[in-house]
Length: 305
Image 1 (cartoon, rainbow, N blue to C red):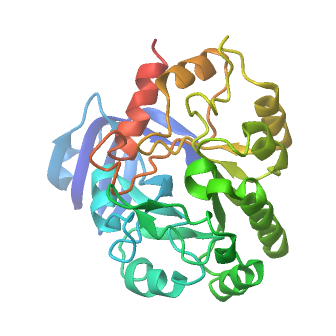
Image 2: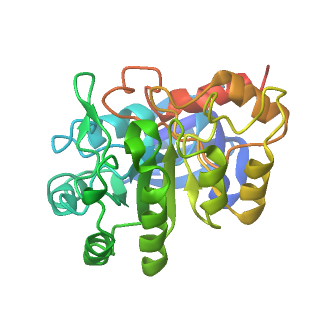
């Protein structure tokens, strides 16, 4: 006897190469059977999901879920239920100073899996709110490469990369230096970098040219002045060169990090993002990002215009 039977949905599982209309049966909290016309009499709960998508739990590549420990963090349990996500990649909310607290008080108790990028700045994203906004890379004294390497190794079973936020907002007058330090740390650890770029300086080209194969450029469809496409809609040469080099382009929608005009231009040029992520945090969870499902839905609309 199955506990739950979903009838007639479009089943999409990229990992198994599945994309077809089928029924999905669950037993004991796991998928028990996938197939056409599974008998409804063998399930305690039967639901008609015709016209809807049935998929494995989603992975949100850019979130901020150090809830209660930082002003930017949202509750991972709540956002996982809201966005149908079972794995949340935290994009550098915690730094070397508070990674242990993030692990003990949020990551380990959370039902969804949380995989953190470690912020190269010692305190992580420590002042992010409507009232107070101070970039963690504005003071270079907060960036200690050796301390970042030490803590990343201490939590090597969790840390999946090094996060750095550069630009006028996150880095003030620090320019490209925080990215150079983050790359040096990542090379020492054999990990990728996830780079945020808000407003110049540094320039888009400076950041693009430094990123290596496997590194992630998040907020990749920003509007001017850091749009990956020019005013004529053509994809900029440094953007194309970065993709050819193996840089990963991640949406990271957030509050002000995604432009519909840029999205339309990039899709029209045949340049698809490698990853759609929400960048959900305290200032974007109530809109415009909301969650991963809403962010994905925007791309369904863009693909039709």
